[in-house]
Length: 159
Ligand SMILES: NC(=O)c1ccc[n+]([C@@H]2O[C@H](COP(=O)([O-])OP(=O)(O)OC[C@H]3O[C@@H](n4cnc5c(N)ncnc54)[C@H](OP(=O)(O)O)[C@@H]3O)[C@@H](O)[C@H]2O)c1
Image (cartoon, rainbow, N blue to C red; front, side, top):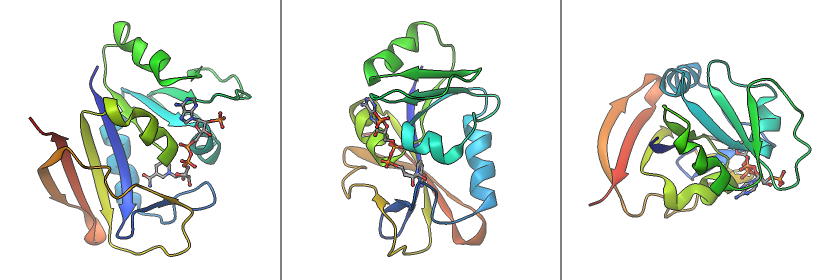
């Protein structure tokens, strides 16, 4: 089970606003779906509430200390990152950390690969951002050009 962070980030490192994405790029949503399909995705409770339903054809894992996550078929709820990572023994697929910011931070030491969509915008009124150093210790492996000026960059851990 490899652990991959996948994020779309604006020029000023914004990723969210009022519990949602601050933009709509259908090509990026399709890319996200294609990339994560038939794998496991882990998200924080805020992102889970924003999405509102399990992502189909993926094992959905929701991280929450407080709980209160509605029981839904195909959705697992865990209270800490260790319990999620312990699934390695049982899963024959990859784990994608799909956000938001607090959840990326929780898995930071375990992420082996980042897939970053660069959104060619500055979002001044965002309320959730990536830390400036989140790619420290990673090197750029692949750059792909997406639609509407999007760039998709894959990074791997150095060394
Ligand atoms: N641009 C992108 O690619 C992207 C991707 C995903 C999300 N987003 C955006 O990001 C925003 C949400 O991000 P966020 O940082 O506010 O919230 P988040 O990471 O989605 O959720 C935070 C919550 O997750 C739980 N959590 C996180 N780490 C945990 C840990 N180690 N152990 C136990 N529980 C843990 C806690 O839940 P409890 O409070 O329930 O205990 C915490 O309050 C939204 O606007 C969303 O749309 C953007």
